[in-house]
Length: 112
Image (cartoon, rainbow, N blue to C red; front, side, top):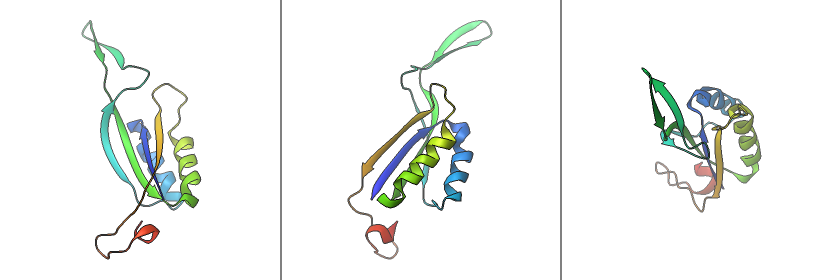
């Protein structure tokens, strides 16, 4: 099993969520986060004064899936979250040792 952690633009959440639903990926966790990457924030003006916003709002999507579904889910996130501009985000993939469904005690892929 694998854990997919995707950091995307907040305005892309609904499109990504619907695309994941369309391919049968129903289980996910979503968080509102703030951070920065290579763009190091942005400079904005308000009433004639410039100020720097160095931590930008992003949305984090976390999915645990089987290795068989991994590529399809990652490709779906890439296609729907990408704008081509700096700040589109990142996808991190890591192994998951075990999953246990609390309600039934099921383990492994059955619990996902």
